[in-house]
Length: 334
Image (cartoon, rainbow, N blue to C red; front, side, top):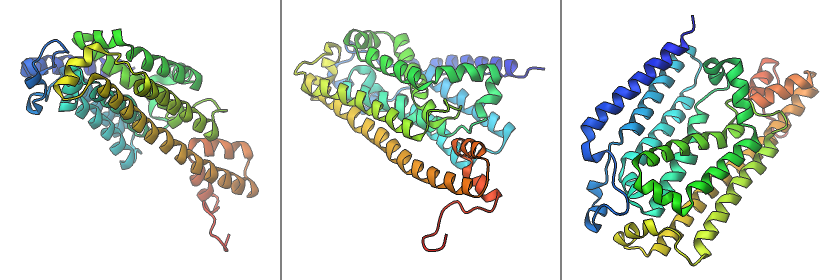
């Protein structure tokens, strides 16, 4: 008997029930109005910027519950992975509930950019780091796994992520997002989904193409940084405030619209630098360790194909220990 469909139906029913209940409880605090609604005083009152967005909160709680149920069933998921996944959910929740979410929805561009980057880059990375390699296979099966592998091909993933980033930053789209609550929700979910897609071939919770090794991953992350740098430079040096819809919020918070736009560019650049160069640095040292371990395993007589597969899956250390081979050399001894 297939248990996946009843579980998904229960999750969907729980999501709808939570969303309806939270909507009733939240009232006017569910979502903040866009650029034409509030006065300057209400826009800058931090106590009024907390929100209870029912759809986003319900989704986070349901995903957390499904993850906990799956972890309980399969076992073997380390505490570090669990902490990473729940930290990703916490960042999403904080970004939409806290005053940051209110400031973003009312139209402060720098706040919107910070929220965008947190739920579209930081949180997805933490979520994926919380998933071991075989986690998704048990959920989607072999056919679904093959489809996900095609979708997360580095060329596809980067292109889709880059296009979605640019489209959401277009001024007419920003204006529509501030006016439409439904489009605002769609934007938040797309940030998370495309962020997951961006990081998927790097983290490899689902195996990426065999040629996409550690060195290629470093180049891929350089492409992420390059797009962030390009957008930031447009914001910094254009001399034009592109977003008339954000002007009221910027002025209410004491910023000139062009200054708010420059601040948004700075937010994007700083966070993209931290994420991209952090990943590149990690990948550089990882490549050095992998090369050393690969050579040691092959010299010990293990099959090179088996060694390559284990290194790629992150189980090279376990393979070495199973054959009594030191994982790391000790200067002057090994």
